[in-house]
Length: 126
Image 1 (cartoon, one colour):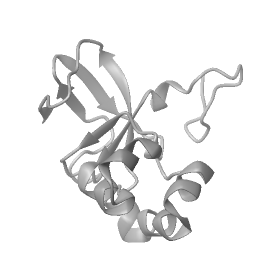
Image 2: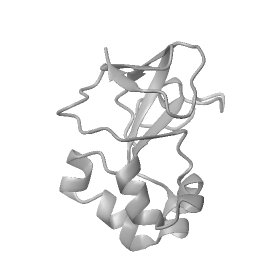
Image 3: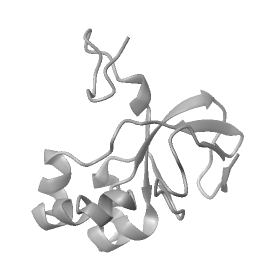
Image 4: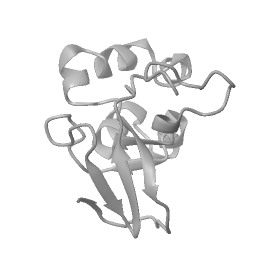
């Protein structure tokens, strides 16, 4: 059993609802200013997609390449590293009430069907 609010399990292993992080590519482009800095956000996928809960409610499934992932309830709000790399104002911006509603910091997901994913693969709601 695991607590949805924690990043790790009691034994210290990774939280199963936080296997993948997705962030909107337009948001990271605004915050990072240089594509070379995108990786500093720590997310595995940058997608040009509306990540809001309205568009992708909990449990939504996404196909990326031939893999299948599922949106989880675990919030993705940023951390001290994110604030240190992009600034406190960036952290505040993505965590405003509207920023959270739009999931500007991104979303967490878990792998349902592992498979190959390549840069440029289309992300589709299933």
